[in-house]
Length: 431
Image (cartoon, rainbow, N blue to C red; front, top):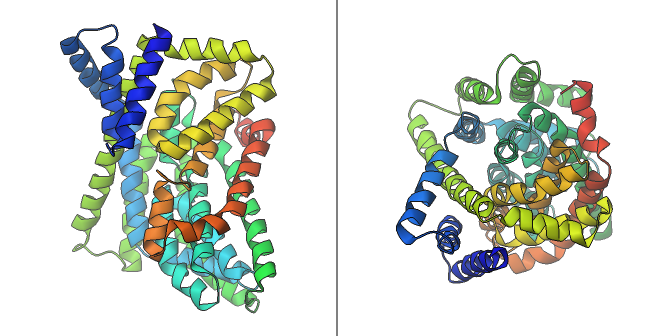
């Protein structure tokens, strides 16, 4: 029964995706088909609908619409320009300076906005034309933009870490947020090393070092935006407020900031709210659909079946983590991050906890792994945003993307096999 259920689920899901069915509907329909193996038609439909509704009934999930709104306010509120100016003053004089500026700005933007697509859109619009003027190929500019944009999903605050906390059955959001800093920074550093090597090979222009006064001036302008990290993460870690309450505070903070910068007015608030609501509805629909599939997997005992199968292959922690990483890399090619986290966390988490791996550490492994999928066709959402903003083709991006892709994989392997990179900061705060 387990093998037959898995076959029905995988075949129907891949078939629906191959004919162009949206991911959320593919998840829902394949979940219904799988449940029909053991349940009549009417109860199956009712059960899926109920599980979608109850899957969204979580206080922690309230943080997601607030963080999406704060990210939209950040994107429209002049924050990106100030972060780019600060990064330019820091590293603009190095070989491949504009590429390094893109990476650092994306890391900063991602960490305050919590959205890879917002970061890719903002950095692509601001730095893309400037990189072309300096002789960078459009493909390389897009490759740098999309890979660096994903670091914001690991560096907190991050919506996907909240989703993982829900899927894992209660991994501490504060611990996950702290655990993401070092892996996110390491990934960014590896991307910078590749960009430096590429720039020296292609002999891109270098700028002049910025005077200290300019560094200080740009830092002061960017400081209010960077303070959001202190307010949100500091409040969560110190226990002053929960992640959900922090997300609401982030909205108020970013709105006030946008009004002070005079980049947001009362006339465009309605448009910002509408765009945030649209994004939220898409994310929540995906979460509801994925929660229904997660329940079906559990009902059919599929996670236990897969767990026994993997543990039967080997009891070596290194081998099993490698198998899980390869599986997630493959999954990330075809599935968006949110449903992947909700569906595969209940499958793989029991396996890794059996081996003594901390759920917080595994959460960072999973998110960092799926970040790579956002940069790969055919479902790489960040890839399509970057290509769309630059008005180029995926074919032109793939070649310069490969060394950056390998840098992300190398960072993933380090984080996978050196738990301290993820768990050091949470241990410092005794979380």
